[in-house]
Image (cartoon, rainbow, N blue to C red; front, top):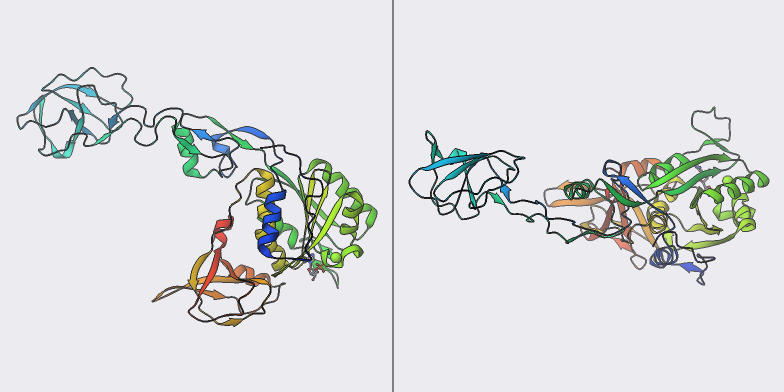
Length: 417
Ligand code: AMP
Ligand code: MG
């Protein structure tokens, strides 16, 4: 699956205006995993995409063992005291077979001896001098962890492409695996272009703006397994831009830019891509967003986002994230949409899908979705107030108070709530 060649001109399509679903389907169907595979120590594997399916190489737990501190015995427990003939601590190997009519002192995690099938909790026992009186009524197998009760040897536990979570790392460690095969991070270069842009930290002259998109896009890319190169701000200078992009394309899987896409061939980045490879301007029927550039320079994918910060942010989540996932070896899963009653009313033009900045508020009747009241796609404050996106479909023309809306929480994109 990895190291696949991309289709030449993978973003070519024949529709004037793309619906959101079609744009996502084109991205996920045309892009293949291009990253290699590396064996990574478990402690460095969280968040990476698994490169091969994993089956349990052994039972977990490997041995039948005690779930509590107490006394091991063969059920049913007799009423009379049993002599305590052994002491089995955690880590003990191959304890002797328990003789009939005796009990063994045993500790949590210690292997159960042959001849025993149950453990009585020490708190429930009457401990004598060299003997123990067991509680009555314990079921056979009480307080015993059976071999393989967590995972059975051979069970398919993780699929290729799974994003490794802390609990998956725990499972891999419990199998005894020290390293795990994962996809190499996707090599992503990020740049901004425009003579008006200044890097944060520099002094701003009249007419200039700080470049906020580059840091934002790098932060968004960092929620995925990416190796990010910051190419900085490129001035509106065709030879410089072409040289920078040609060089970056040699050593990156993806070049991500923002701004300038709506001006088409007047834009230097767009003109540079056209000279170096192939490029398509997609008019996607969504708000915010719409014009995005999709291109290819050899095996390097080019994605040009709108310049407005809100549009760049939303388009990253909707289109760049699935593209990075497909190129990097992840699964092609759609984000979850939760149905939540609207806590507001709002009309909308038909024909395009809109993504509003929103959050959830608790009410006595349960949570409702709220919408950031202002629409401007330059308003970073709306993104900051939001904990998710409210999705309103193409044919919907209004959201009314109390009716369900689709809410896409940001935390599923790796953005803390
Ligand atoms: P454009 O898509 O180039 O027409 O840009 C649309 C708006 O986004 C303009 O107000 C630009 O100044 C702004 N913009 C473009 N690039 C950036 C950037 N890197 N950071 C912040 N704002 C930007
Ligand atoms: Mg510009």
